[in-house]
Length: 371
Image (tube, rainbow, N blue to C red):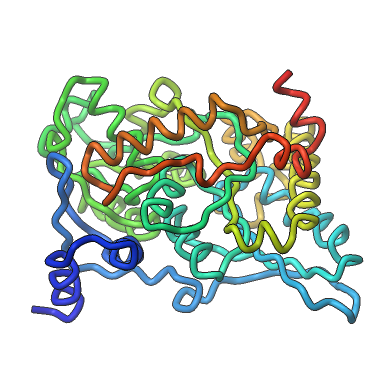
């Protein structure tokens, strides 16, 4: 038995404690492929190497005063949305420099890898869908939800190969569907299965991070792939895949910006400035679609006109944390627990702040939008 299998078998025999939960969550991100059947999964060999230490994430910084002694590490946007604009414009670095901060932008394969880094102190601000925060909360991590976004379901799609005979979701019976575990792709697959009144073992679920899933899909090793932009547009443009369905009628959740409790307590001023500058970037992106596409085209395999079309799938602007948002997040947490995919019932409210605390750093424009 290989070494990782021995370790996993050992932890599976032990009672699930908080320490064990943390180990299992982190270790599940290292194992790329497993099967999902009626709420259980069997891990297969294929390691992921996406932690900050192993993936050597790139970073960019702005010139700062010599007194700089604080760093804000923010996830680099792979979706090429307003967060990517914020990095390119450099305004956040300019605003934080007088306070002694340097900004670093780190890249990760997907949301679960971000939150593992957030929990271990290797990332300060993450941007993920609804499920990664729940999985890391189930592992006992001191997460703090900062802000949320529109649903943007059109930006996530279920792809099948261009020449696939599959015409609708029910044609995928017994076929391999790839997605990142604990991602929006995972959640929307569950929603699609429920919508058809089927069981979770209707398809063979293959847990792969986006880079590995991209290769597997391109080589015909999986029959479908639930993934977000810009992977979708790239696959369609290259005539590798076609959209079987998107998340517009499936998604009932939102993305979140999150941090850990320690960073929230130590650097509230940095969080406030980050959200203010991000909201400005959101507004700029909405009002300047052509300029945005031209700005971001060099960092993707898409030309500016194609990128501009891709961005039409998005709604722009941060949204405040409300009771409705919290209740929906609890509903998702209950779903994952009932499916047996997290080790304990999660009270998501432990990661949310009071309305008074949110008012201290949420942009006024964003707070006004809930009135």
